[in-house]
Image (cartoon, rainbow, N blue to C red; front, side, top):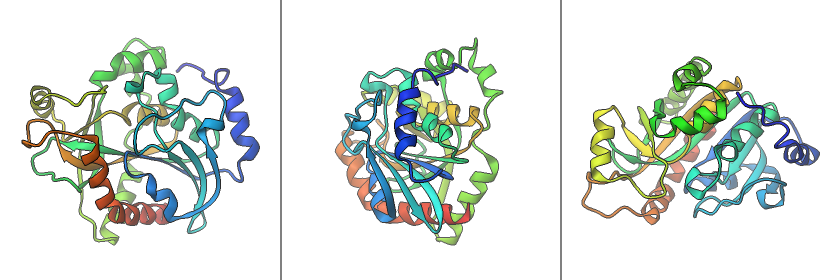
Length: 273
């Protein structure tokens, strides 16, 4: 795996200088899910625009903050704003939340995202626990990041999803009486949504949901030794499944409707960790 320490030495030093504590759990908040940061006690908030060499988030629903927060005596690190490949950033910038979480000492990394439902048993508002991910569309970038010949070699380094972490999430959902589904997350580079033909192909290859993030963050975090898991909020039907035209506004609206359920689940997960 490529050593990014020299590239981000100044960035990590700036965060550590103001960090109030060492976090136990890191969370990356997906599109429309950033409101979770307001539902818990924030100890210190850092605008990412004030950090050296931290890219600007340009997508609605990704505000651009790193929060040190507390809930039920657990020390948290929240990333309110994600960095996407489709914004034009190199993968070494897109994995910064995972990199920073590891450098600050977090043991757990919970990734969340908004995704389109491919599995016809899913409906907007469902939560899906990622039990596997497809990295076909990001193979070149991951190979460059890890400096290895094949993704198959990379897979031998990773522990995603962490089985114990996933079990905790399932138990948290049971305790909160939330029906959480399980499935495979399919990565697309974006920025455009997949075509109906691409969705049919993804479905035949085992995809349950599609999105434009998370895979590289999960792979990198797991390779660093953190316990990593991911939850997708199904915000819309993927292209061709519904006659409606896809839009980011629909993603945001569904996320807003599901935020109470999402917040309850994440808070229970934190309590059980």
